[in-house]
Image 1 (tube, rainbow, N blue to C red):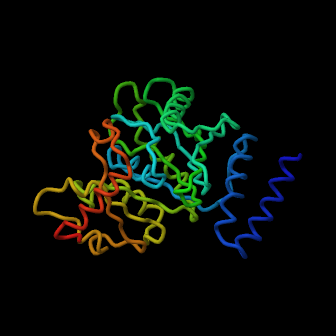
Image 2: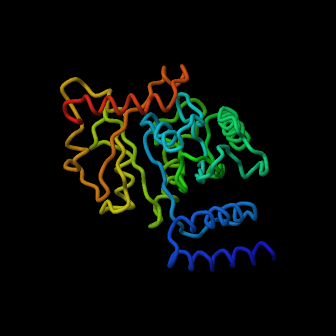
Image 3: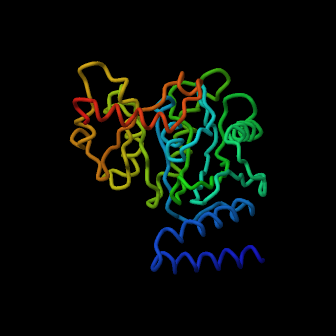
Length: 283
């Protein structure tokens, strides 16, 4: 009963905060509610502000998320690496560490250990094959370099089952993504690689199904440095090709070699800035 009373109290606070004090106070309450519902085994039915990251398997979703945090902490590799939703609650704080809901009280100061825990917890739920599960991992990252936000990392869109994946893997992933992005309060980060034709972007196609007017979709164009010589994404970034109300953001990802060589995110961001400033179309 105490849990239910607390939820009702928090729900009342949400109504108060929404009207008065804005998002900064709302988000910690949302996070507490999210945790409480998960612990009670109750489906989290409150439509609260979240940002879902959607894209094809190699579109660069991980890099986009890691840049939001400023640290490497997501599993990498080929095929479906994200096999269950990761609800990532970012909390602005003077100290930097992570905390998982499934091992509450344990603080992870080593972000490599966070990656390992995500991998292990995924395997615990899905086994070592490449199956997926809708049961989320809840990770809270405290850092002086983040805004108070809730981001959701979702499996990459795929077309063909690999190895012992179920034959309907594409539909399973699609259904999982839709449960998050169909909510009116969910912002959709639709991630597409610049060396792919925007008209064939699975992320934008899926976003358009639930947000036909493009009111809550933000386009993210990754890998701008990998476009063929003589081509650029200027028309997309100027929001002229497939317009979205919130427009497009262009990014340059670290290469797989950079990641394996532990190239620092801060160095990568600096390189990205130099790329844009020196590029004839983007500067």
